[in-house]
Amino acid sequence: MRLGRDFFTRNTILVSRDLLGKTLVYRDGKDIYKGIIVETEAYISTNDEAAHFNKGLTERTRIIDEAGGHVYIYNIYGMYQLFNIVAEVPGIHGAVLVRALEPIKGIEKMYKNRYKKTYDNPKRREIINLTNGPAKLVMAYGLSKERHYGLDLATSRELWIEEGIQLSREDIVRSKRINIDYAEKGRDYLLRFYIKDNPFVSKK
Image (cartoon, rainbow, N blue to C red):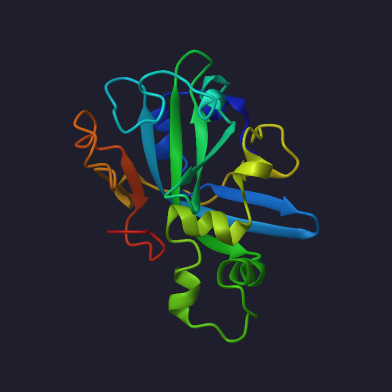
């Protein structure tokens, strides 16, 4: 079952946690990609210097002011793009970075997108490395800021999120976010969530 608006227009931290186990689906023409979300990070507007929108919205972050469920993709290091999902209701700013997926459908196409070579008896390490990081999963799915920024996951026929596997509280690990040491306010917040013992998590 597809997730509706009500799922996304909640507290950002709850959305980030509850996305674990859900399935990100992308229809690219005849190709269907599916992956289980195994790792996320929440970014909030209150005292969170790691959030791009902490000091107000810009042209880059304007989508954050829309209702939860919209896609926010941005460039990093001049060569990678990261996939985020807007949370909360309009006027309250929050977003969830999808950090890692476990691919379950369209793996051959993901492999070609990611490695630019034919899928031919790949090693297990190559499969794990397909989507075990935020920039990697964007490349594997063939997503881009140019094509997908601002899409509405609640209504889009191209990109959406479905119910997935059921998790217990014991299955979920909560920790500090990664690579935000620059953020004096926010770097110690426990806003990263991942599925315990899942091999596709980017960093244990």
